[in-house]
Amino acid sequence: MRTPAGVGFAPMHEGEVISPDAFQALPEEKRHRIEHEVETLQAELQVVMRELPALVRESRRRLHEYNREVTRFAVEHLIDELRKAHAGLKNVVAYFDAVQDDIIENFNAFVRPDEGEPAPGQAPPVAGMLGTPFERYAVNVVVDRRAEKGSPVVYEDHPTHQRLLGDAEHVAHLGALVTDFTLIKPGALHRANGGHLIVDALRLLQQPFAYDALKQALRARQIRIESPGRALSMISTRSLEPEPIPLNVKVVLIGDRMLY
Image (cartoon, rainbow, N blue to C red):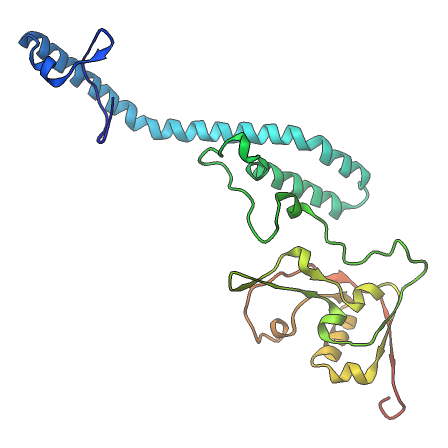
């Protein structure tokens, strides 16, 4: 029987638990025999109870591995199709490998509420600013040139630091500023990469940090999305650090003779 103190034993007769008064009415020899049996069972129960936490952990581990295998069976053939379609792009294939591993590890995020509550010890649902688990695996396309022909020619009429090199935007959430990869926005250098960027020199020089950031990108031959405050160590807030993108662009500065 379950009691406030845990699990215990009680004598039964014809399928019913004997009340304390009925138990006291039993012959003394029978009471002693029952009490001895209860003590013996209680000792055996203590041994089982000590082993129970380990058994529960093992059962949860096996259930977790079983769910992982089922998830792997469900998604592996779909990811394989994507791997074959992009076999020539090593970074893309590596991304698909990471997606598959992440889905398997966070399988619980895809369980519908009517399919039951997750078992204790399973991976928690994916949390964050992204609305659904599927948005976690979305692709943020920063530049799309499918409709363009030839090398790009971009004119930036407001050459601020962010508009030149891009930015990881933030949104207010519960009194704090948060971000995720879907908020990474491209700059003029991204759109002009592989072609030409035209900038008004006077407007460029009037923007804080923009000219130095442009020269740094050209020297390093890569675009690094980073806020001016973080680049100058003015702020220490943690944010996204997108991987630098190789840069190959010709920059044309236009302006009057005196400025030249």
